[in-house]
Amino acid sequence: MNTNQPIPATQNDAWGFWGTMNEHASTAWTLAMTTVSDATGQTLESVRIFLDSRHGRHFADDVQNGLCQGQTLADAINSATQQWLGWKIGRQTSKDYGIPRGLPYLTGFVIHCEVTDEALST
Figure 1 (tube, rainbow, N blue to C red):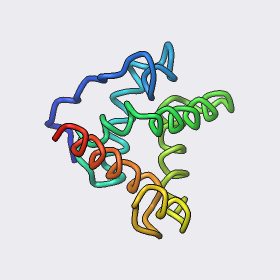
Figure 2 (cartoon, rainbow, N blue to C red; figure 1 turned 90 degrees about the horizontal axis):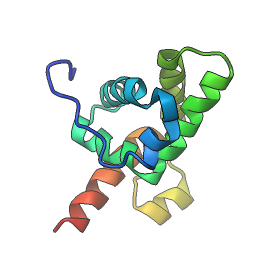
Figure 3 (cartoon, rainbow, N blue to C red; figure 1 turned 180 degrees about the vertical axis):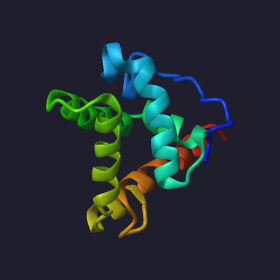
Figure 4 (tube, one colour; figure 1 turned 90 degrees about the vertical axis):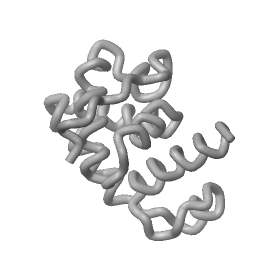
C-alpha cells in the first residue's frame, strides 16, 4: 500500500517505539511503519505519530517480547500487529480516550494519536 511513499523519520528517537527498540530501531522502524500502515489503512504520517507516542513504546514492548521468544524481527512486528488488532476498544478505554468502542485497538490508537497531534498543533 505505501511502498512508493518515503518513510517518515522518527521525531522521538529517545523514547516511543524507536527508543524502546534499541539496536533494532532503524530496521524495525521501516518494518513497523509499513506493517502498521497496511494493517490499519492509516497513513505513514499517522503511524509515525503513533510509534513516537507512549502507545508506540508499549507496541515496541510487545515486539521486544516476540524477539525474546526467538521470533525474527519481522515476525515479532507482525505478531504484535496482529495482537493489537485482535484487541477491541472497550467501554473504559472509549470513555478515557474518545475512541469508538469495538474498534481494533491498534487502529483506534493510531487514529487517536493523529487526532491528538492535530489538536495540539492548532
